[in-house]
Length: 495
Length: 143
Image (cartoon, rainbow over all chains, first blue to last red; front, side, top):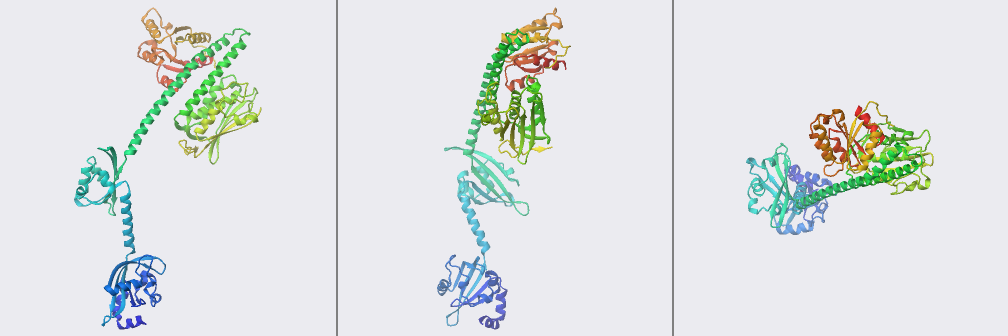
């Protein structure tokens, strides 16, 4: 009604209001909306028809601020015009921020007549402002010093922003901050290569500061901010105290050096002791070899054989102990593993021995699988498993030891199989135990399979065994393709 | 068993501070007919002196000079490696034809690595010296 009347009476004026970019809302003194322009529809979502007749409380929101109609009215009577920023509730429930100018219109006898609200949606500006406030709060609370400069013509850059931490870490004072950024930074950090920092790339350097409190190390990083035109508009300079980091690093390096030298000493000791233990033993073995060769009659030969066997046994034991000691401390050297080559080296160690001559050596790697791993550790595994197969072979015509390399979806599988004496069921669980010997006829240190399992585990894999007495024994090593740690087999390829 | 080629002859110099090992090595080398002449020295010092005297005496023909040296590593005063260095410095006709075979109880891979770097070293063997290793060595030296 009122709108129609208004339209008629002030059609030009109303057309102007409708075309305005600001939301214009007119209410009577009770707060009932009597006019609602186009922009109001846009800003608040209610059509003119929906809004008319409601009070202004339609769009006020009490949780956000206290500008309910009643309060506004109270203030209007006192000051006629209110300029404020308030939250408004839209039809879809969302909250927007508006800058509003509310005016009380009075008639000729000074009686309040209408309330006119003219508002502009400033939600985006408010959000930006809030964001900036958050950023500033973060900048002030972090331990890294931050200084942002604004590039200007002629190189006299201005300092746009500097946080507390930067001032504390750099030792800047307020007077210094008033001069250009370059001047300030050069005076505080003469080590800074300005031309490098001037470039469009990130630059970093470390400085050392001696003070009464001790030496401190600072890391300075400059990050250029490139604008749409490809030129540097701002530069962020970050300052960080890395004293603790540096100290830890130094400490680590010292510890690492010490460890390395201890390890080397241990190596020397292990080899030295092994040499001194083995030298007389090798003399005994050498002498028994000679006695056998030069044949000292039938009566002596059983004795010679037993001396030789005992000496060999002691020799094996020493070798195993050394291998175990080395294996535990060995730094891995990752390289391409050619299983065929490892197999040949192991086979050659045994091919010409008495037992080895009676055995067929087979190697099968149909997919020609190659992995990257620790070669020396694999050689230990092959030597021990192939050696065992020969040691526990039966004196039958078709004795064999067979190494097969295959893969499934997740792992590379290497198996060593023989048709030897096999392992009794009740001893299967213990074969990998330290110093366990499943056989009391053949000599052994009880360390071989223990070392094998330790080595396989060091490579990130697992070993399992299946066996049948006087039929077969099969050890299977499984190394996951995606073995974690340094022993990645990701480079696995089947060519 | 590795068969020994028929045509191989050599003169051997054994250097080891252990008498028992020298005894074993000499008997093994002779027993396997690896060498016609076997010289034995119980120290690197005396070995150097022996070689020097040999070279200084014009009455001794080249056919009497050692062609293969079996060299221990762990020895007092001058060890095997130091002896190798001395030998490399020694410029004489017979040194150029010399083959050194390291013969040791050491299983330190660094020792083998170090030995293999020397031009004079033909092989690296672990004690004890056996008929098999001698035959294999013969094959290698002939080729």
